Amino acid sequence: MARELRKAKVTDGEVYIRYTEPPTKSSAGETITLEGSDPPLKELKEALQALKPHLLTLCSAPKEWAKDITIRSVTISDVGGVVITGLRALPASDAPLVLNSPHMEPTPALKDALEDLEAECWRYVDGERAQLTLALETAAASG
Image 1 (cartoon, rainbow, N blue to C red):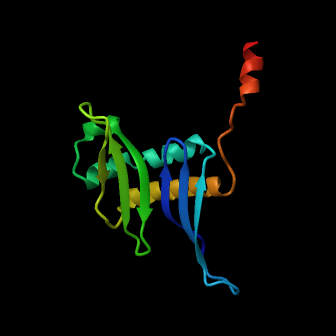
Image 2 (image 1 turned 60 degrees about the vertical axis):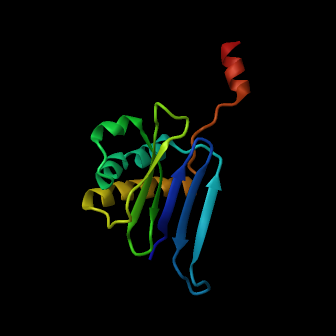
């Protein structure tokens, strides 16, 4: 049995990943939460955004909304259901519309997208992060 992703969330300044570790001889298994401020690889962001069409379908939202939606998180229950959360920019408001899909069993296409997201989350958990540019490097390049 392998670790299982339970939640992935990416905001502008933080990555939040919650997963379960399987039981071992010395442990009954545990839930681990990683909150990191290191920026993720672009592949993690892309894998999360690849859930847009699934959110739109599950919420019966128009496909035209895709350009205005940012997927914020996905939660996977221990019984296999999925909830996808996205934010849609609203022109008449500073606050976004929050879309939460219903808790549903994933379709085969959504399962594929979730596997891609899970692989990228493991890369983040295992230490693969986006490279930061130091101010010194930027100043040296322009000077």
